[in-house]
Length: 283
Image (cartoon, rainbow, N blue to C red; front, side):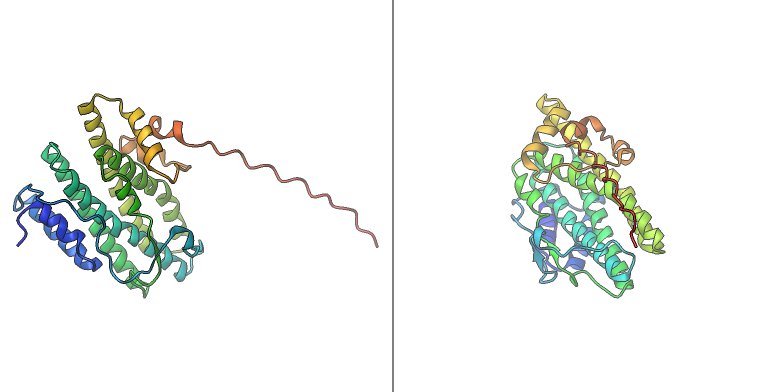
């Protein structure tokens, strides 16, 4: 029987089957909210979470390109990729809790990140059910193995973890989801669009939690948040920040452009196409 937070986190992280991971997360999150788990974290989390035999995990460069059309195959590929992100997000939340919750932080920190884990589990379940409705399931397609890199890179420092995971990776989800929702509605797939809109709206709170606790740490350390965030992202995030930004949703999360704009490359304008030199037709 699981009685403490650390054992709850470890149970999730060492469970390979995705829906078992979801079930455990939801049960342990409810137990924490109801005061049935102690805050003890007796052991460190595993370096890498358990994963099922499927999907096949590939390097990002080896992943097949997804089409952007509205056929069922392309929509399944999109939803499968998002389900893979949410599965990793479950483990990222529990790793953060078990690795850092005992570092002199208030209970509100743990409350927030257990709630995030619960949200991510629900998101994965929603996506899996939508895949099932389209005749597919998680594991049917390959997935890339680069998502856990952020956890490994920032395992030594909570500020780095918050800077990279919620404030870069989850914020990127806020940037790209609205366009995806619009495309799905244009294809007539309102069920998938509604699902992604729900995920987007809830992820705003995840980015807000990251920004809030990052600033809390900065206040403890006596450092300026924007400058430290830029330093940590430059050092620990290899992908580089990408435009366009969903400034509206980021601002709702309390994450203003003063953080990310100064360290984002400005893309050069596309050169104008030269006029076509059409020679007069000769007969």
